[in-house]
Image 1: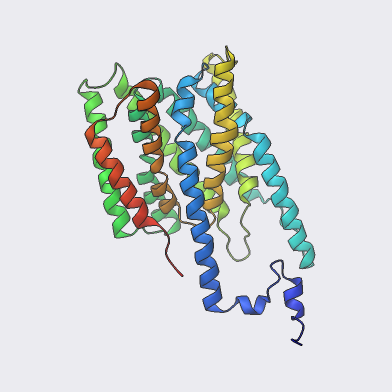
Image 2 (image 1 turned 90 degrees about the horizontal axis):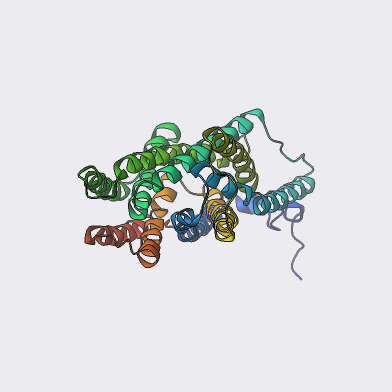
Amino acid sequence: MSPPPPISAALSPTGVDDAALLSPVLVEANEARLRRQAFGAVLLAAAIIGFSPILVRLSDVGPAAIGFWRMFFSLGPTALWALAERREAKLHARIRAQTAPRLTGRQMLLVAAAGVAFGADLILFHAGLARTSTANGVLIGNLYVIFVFGLGWMCLGERPTRGLLIALGFAMAGAALIVGSSLGGGGRPGSFIGDLLCVGGALAYAFYMLFVRILRLENPGRPALGGGMTALLSSAVGMVMCLAWAIAAGERIMPAGMDGLLAVAGLGAIVHAGGQGLTTFALGRLPAGVISMVMLLQILVGTALAALLFREFPPALVLLGGGLLVAGVVAARPRGR
């Protein structure tokens, strides 16, 4: 008969002896597994968020009002996620005879900053999308990848690899061609202003990812904030900001028809709660730069849907860039046994 497990294993929420988990091999294997899970979550998030520009086009309210409804309809799913997360944290704390961590003042400030940054992103991106093509908005809006790499490098010391920097070079070149085409009159009227608004939205979203990454990082003496609570609180702050902006700008707030209501409901319940929720979850396990690189796959989803629904067919250069993006994502995948 084998001896009973040590008491530390019985007290561990995983049922494994905590001393055994200190083995470098086991720790690295577990970290690799978590990174692969996060990578899969980001792939799914990119596919979901790729529907965002299509639903924005189908909505019939103002740019800031779209952001308000998007986050309003996301509160229910994210609240359930945060509640389940809180219950699990209390259970683990009870097993270890500890007190469940509470929200600190620093975390509240970071959550508020994340909500404001995401609200600004939605307002600018939705306003830009109304003035440019769907392909332009999707492609230029994803310039946030460049800003995320820069901010992550400067603020968090998450230095990008050479392969990711090469992929970023292709992204910058493609974005320059798109903006240059709009400036030269190749796009729809006012598309240059729309492109610039999308660039502003990309910068705001980069700050949102930076704030969330800081919240989701766990340091000695400073526990990380759960993904569900981060998504819930930042969405609530962003929702209030978008509503205030929509009222001040005199936008239409209430959808005029059922199609418009379903569009904003889909943005909230599916795109925001699902796509952004998965991204928030992954930010606790992968560097922000790697996640932003994978999220470029939403370009392929958005441009393909725009071609099918609105007959906005991307040029051959965009198709070539799509192949390069896929190659970059494959190169960015986490490794480890």
